[in-house]
Image (cartoon, rainbow, N blue to C red; front, side, top):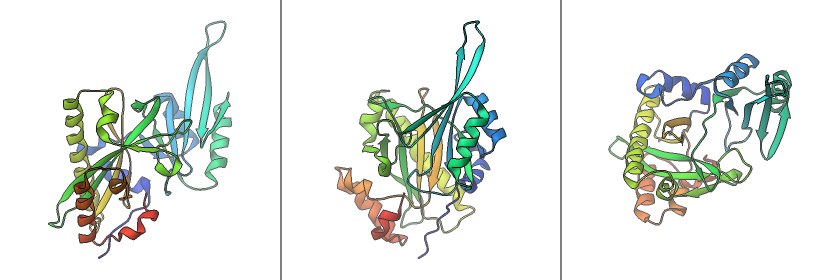
Length: 265
């Protein structure tokens, strides 16, 4: 049984944006260019630049526009670029763009509105919502895990040193248990709705890993969608074995070979 994969982040983003009910969850996103860099930094001050195709968070950069006042009270703009564990400062936007272009190495990149995510122990975290086709053919969100970025890292991916954590302890520092459960349900519904939207264009789609961020106003933002999500965290980090049993049961039913887990993201 074929399990469909879609590698282009830009293609998936455009499909999600076609659904008015989902479009509000998507941060401003476009193909990278100097004009878009200038426009989005003016609009949002924080942006992420990521390869259109790629896994494990490789190649992701973060740029920020800083406003300072000089001795005469005039506003001065400076720019900060972060990638891997490096930080570079720029006084001119053209210099920033040139450095970004060099780091892109000729590959197509996206630029996305930066989300100032909730934090755990002063480190930002995002959430992965796993949504699968059930043996009955219905979409179902079967698990949610949190991913906390390592110190000095801008991405939360496990392969880049991020720490996997349970949903409840991550959210408990920011809201009541009832509020957290309400957001959990919204996340599960969002996973189902995004999967259904993508399936309209990719009928053989069987699973997605929906990466979402939550800001300090508790807005939910779709960062990206993986069509070959890692399943092993749900075995390794959940004390309740029934969660992984369901994940595994569904995966086997639609033909996912769990031995390919190291290729997932």
